[in-house]
Image (spheres, rainbow, N blue to C red):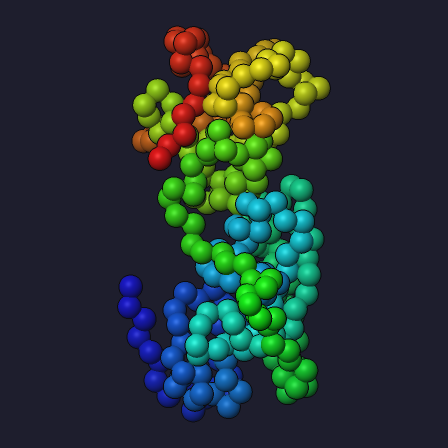
Length: 262
């Protein structure tokens, strides 16, 4: 995709504001504004520089994130001086959509405040601590391979955190019977409800159990189990755990495992 550089913006505006914009601003454009340009970034910089800070914070199981308002630097993305920063707790129930909405509201409110009192804020800015890259974390764009659950390498918590980060947008995937299937909704297994979980099992193993008169499905991770309540094979409609059990597991009881996609 090509982005056409706007012309004569400085004739009408004193400052440029960048939010969720994936193009690099050339130095001549930044310098054309009286006060340069500023960027609202959804992380506590220098943590999670890059295109997917919210996703990576959730995938890594962080308990805290925030927003940063920084000067746009013409040398690299997300490295400018910090004008304002505020923390926000990541709630256990947060997913990308809920956290992105909340950080968007918080960021918009503080962005207006910064613009209203810009000269005072500008005078109090501070550089990002980047000596030897201490405290710097990267948040690159999510690649297709990142969405594959690796049953033998990820714990149940890591699998759930992966779903929280990208499950609603991109999806998380596994292999079953030579086909790719999207696990559309997963959560930690409730041992109070699943009472027949095997003591020993291999990663990817599918455990089917009747809970409250319904078929429920648990899947073994490297450590612990997750429950999946809805599935979708490529090109097919979404099915619930009961339909998956009746349509696949009961027809071929030996095909009781998921495989890691490469």
